[in-house]
Image (cartoon, rainbow, N blue to C red; front, side, top):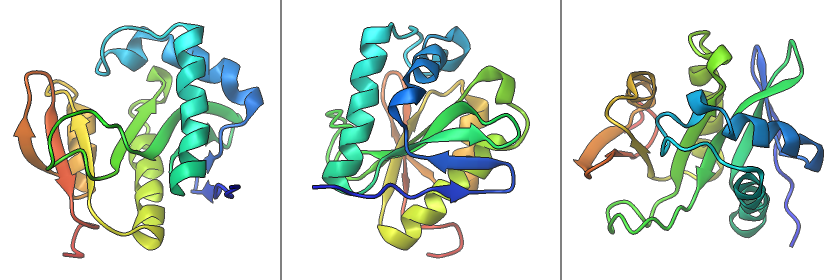
Amino acid sequence: MSRTIPTINTARLTLQAMRPQDFDRFAQIWAMPGVVRHIGGTPRDRSESWNVFLRIAGHWQMTGFGQWAIVEQRTRRMIGQTGFFHGARNLGEDFDIYPEAGWVLVPRAHGQGYGIEAVQAAHEWFDRVIPGPLVAQITPDNASSLVLAGRLGYRPIRETSEVVLFRRDGPPGGR
């Protein structure tokens, strides 16, 4: 089975399929303490990054959706990733049966509006192509992701010992 991964352009960013030549940058990003601070706290080694990188590629092939590399158009450099996946996290029927949204940016890209620009573009694609509920998990101390999730229509469903679980039933104002 072969699926085409769409490319999405915004005013300043391109969301594109991750290519083999993107792996070194992907591994660099996930080795940054500032990237993983709210995502488990432990930087990934190259082997862990390689396994996740392959999982991202395979997810598109198996489900028709997945995660994109976020590329800053001005520099043509990958600055993060965003998209959707099935995490199979054993967090319950109110969470695990839905696609999960995720986003991450390198620290130097924070505070520039790149997060909402990229994540909103990904969600607009999802709403057109695979409409339906989405979930996300965010640590309570990740203020910028909590704000972003609220702007996109996510509402808390419950807390675990480490994260708040959210659900989005469609675009804000579209319910």
